[in-house]
Image (cartoon, rainbow, N blue to C red; front, side):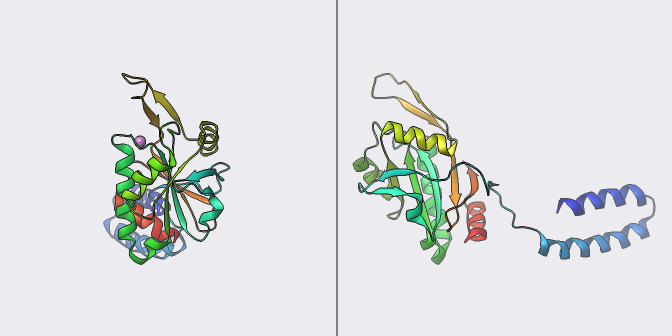
Length: 210
Ligand code: NI
């Protein structure tokens, strides 16, 4: 309620000396604040990106070899995260957080779909994703494609990724955007969840959407 806070400060400046007026005004503001809350639009911990002109769709191969687009997940709240199976920390943390989010959603967890898009298509084959992604939750889906498809998908989502050379040609890592995109059941992108957002905050945001 930023409006109420501003009004409070104005009142304090004006009535700073008069304690009685101040208390009366505080009571009035409190009532305004409480009734005002009901008219507030839903607020989220995540960044609300409703109506964003990007992150519209993808066309990739899932870990069972099936072709997938966003339309396959209509009717569900889809969380899309970009990463790679050899990621040492960010990706496994995000996936285990999402598994916990799903558990905490209880029965609503069935309406949640978690999609992990690989930014390492050279190493992350569908077979490898099939071993890695469902280990966090059997319903989670890994997606990959040709390097061109992955690059196009990352561009569409405004996601950054870049190979970082390792000691050998095969031991490279990949720097990547560490955030999740949340789609509502109608397939519209709604939220951008930063890496490290507490599980309970994500749960509350998703309950707001579901
Ligand atoms: Ni990662």
